[in-house]
Image 1 (cartoon, helix red, strand yellow):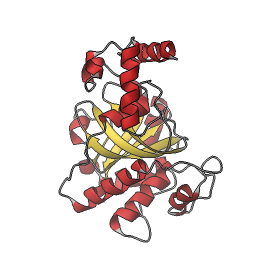
Image 2 (cartoon, one colour):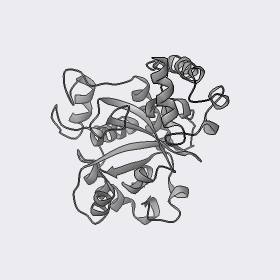
Image 3 (cartoon, one colour):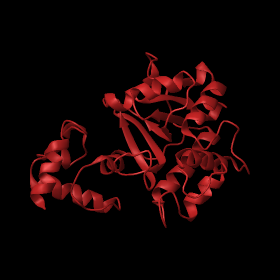
Image 4 (cartoon, helix red, strand yellow):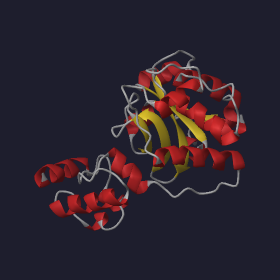
Amino acid sequence: MSDARAKYNAKQAGVLWTASELQPPLNGLDPAEVEFADAVAALQVQHGLKADGKLGPSTLAALTAPALVKTGLEVVDSLLAVAAAEADAKIREVGGANKGSRVEEYQRAVSLRPGDPWCAAFVAWCMMQSRGWLAPPAWCSGSAITTWQKGSRKAGPAASCTPLFNDYRGRIGAGWIWVRAKDEAGATEARRGNWVQGHCGIVVAVDSIGFHTVEGNTNAAGSRDGDGVYRKLHKWSDAEQIARTIGWFDSSRI
C-alpha cells in the first residue's frame, strides 16, 4: 500500500503538480517517500476525501480550492454560493448512470430525462437557483456545446473569450462558464459553429495556478460523463486541457 502510494505520487510530481506549489507540510517532503503519502492522507481526512494518500486531480482541487470570496456582484456571488453548496454536499448519482433524485432535478431544468448527460443541466439549474427563476435563461441548454454557442453569442466579444485570445487568462473571472470539447480538433469545430461532444462547468475562482471550477457529471479523473458534482482545478500549464477548451463567457452579463 505504502509503496503504491509513493510510486503514484512520484509519477504525478512535475506533471499534475509541483511540490513548490503545494501547502505545508507537503512542500517540504519528498513525493517519492511514504511520509508524503501519509501527509496527503491526513489532509484528505480533513477535507472529507477518501484517505488513500494519493495526490490526484480531486485531492489537488480540494487542497487548492480558494475560499469563497465575495465579488460585490450579487448575481455572481449567488451563483458561486449555489455551485459551492452542491460541491460541498458531494452530490453523486444514485441508481445508475446519470440518475438520482438531485441529478434528475438538474436534468428537469432543461427538459432532460434520467440517464441523459447533465453537465450543462447543472449549470442551468445553478443559474435558476441563484436568481430565483422558475426557468433557466435562454442561453442555457441540455448540451454543453449549445450552451457555448448561445451563451458566447449573447455575451459578445466583450464578455467571452477563447484560448486563441492573447489575453484570455486576464479576462476570465468568477461566474464565467467554461466549455471544452473532447479534443483540440473538436474545440476548433465548436468555435466554427458545429456540434461536438463537450463538457462545461462554472468558474468559481481564477489565480496564478489556473481556473477553479464546480462541475456536474464529472468525476475524480475529470471525465465528461462522471458520477457527481466536483470541484476541479484546471492549470494554465495543462496544455492539453487548454487546447481542448472551446472558451469561456461571463454569465453575469447576459
